[in-house]
Image 1 (tube, rainbow, N blue to C red):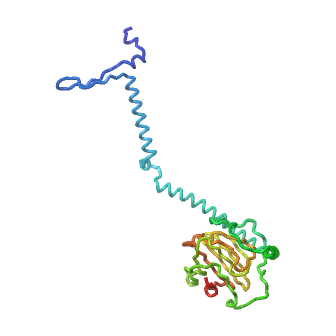
Image 2 (cartoon, rainbow, N blue to C red; image 1 turned 135 degrees about the vertical axis):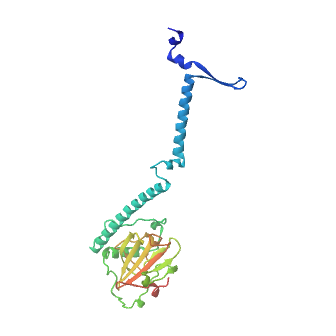
Image 3 (cartoon, rainbow, N blue to C red; image 1 turned 90 degrees about the vertical axis):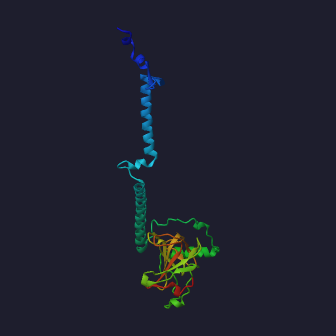
Length: 287
């Protein structure tokens, strides 16, 4: 066998070849390159890896990936994310609304609601609000609340005026009236703007018949008074009283807020209802 046939495959890979470039006119050697089969294989493989890595980097870290058919663009990804957030919020709202109806059913039946919807979004803790009361007054309040917890006629019958002008209403909030009562436009209350974290007070003695959260009005609390009067306080950020609590005129019941969809800023929406019909609070209260 010849010497070339006796060479192994590894030796043949290492055989050197020279690539020479000549000047076509003078035949002068201009440039040359010594290569082997192994060098060519390594260079080709390296070039292929570089091309693959470069294409992957362009697709992964640039906007070119959006040109790939079937790949979602930025708007579609944002829409998917927002739909997921809305779905989660909708599930939470349905859960709280079911709990709200269950609480109303329990109250109508004269039972204590097992789970009150009372989710706080306020930075102010109710425990930080302090009121000066004597020990005797606190004991008396506790006894009355335990005895008359769900009695909507808890107020004494010594005074039963039929004329609302003879009733002294306590202003639930001192502030600026931004939108007055207007029954023709289905605005059955008065909107009052005040400083942030202002305390909302009960306008009359009464019993809390509802404290809950709704999609439209946020945190809302209803109080039943004598003479078929009901006061309503909407868009609060925090509720300080629960259903069944007995309150006195001027007692803190909530913190002003901006909760609910039907609101344009922090304020209190205050309503007065007499015998099932809305009345203008500004006819009886100076805010």
